[in-house]
Length: 287
Figure 1 (tube, rainbow, N blue to C red):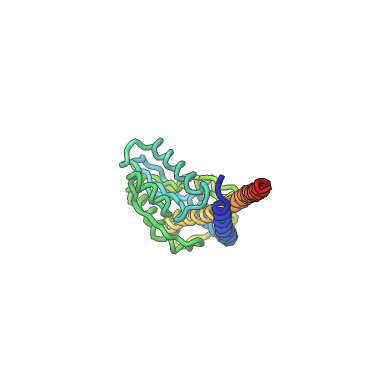
Figure 2 (figure 1 turned 45 degrees about the vertical axis):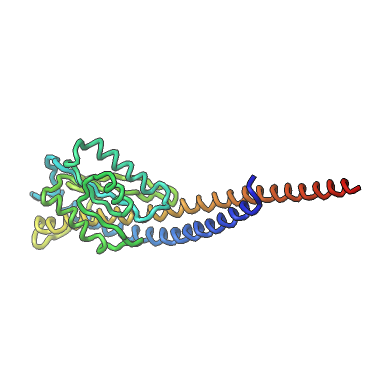
């Protein structure tokens, strides 16, 4: 049995760890609230730009844009959103496991795909396995602005426009609730599903100079907005996953402290009983 000093030391260290996990839980809860507000604030913009794009693309005019047409796939791009830090439960492992499985199912050679990780955990995962990384970004803020990922989003869209890649997917954790996040893998390019995703246009539009010119300018912005929307969604999931993980760690610390306290009391009682037995035995010997 461990000594009283050892048990006492473990109780003290566990209480200090509990204070840390509790503080991290509260911080993540605050960040989650802000991330939810950001996601809700971004939705109206996404709905409107999707409505306009769908109105033009499905408006009966002869629109010819490469981002709206499928072509033979020679190389695929994957944007993968993870966090820069751990302590978030299965947040990172679930999305990395999913995208890694899909890559190996779809491709037999590393020349057939490239990866664009957003987050240090994902970057390190792919680099460790010598998987081709086209570009990367780390150190994103907890509440990122569009300007933070504008360059890498534009680069990803340009890779498709230049026919360096023939399709582009994005993998991230979709925020369902504070305790539930689900991995999503969505095809970003080509934009072949605008008509099915967009709602019926609520307004009629007049275009100046013309629909084709506007679409050419709007489609890259729309694709970049989809990437930012996934990042905002992923950030909300990250904060929720970390909050849940830290709450579980705090609860486990409470249970461990209770168990250690019980062991300490039992050991202390046994030590007192032993001392009393020795005193009584010594007194009896003197008689």
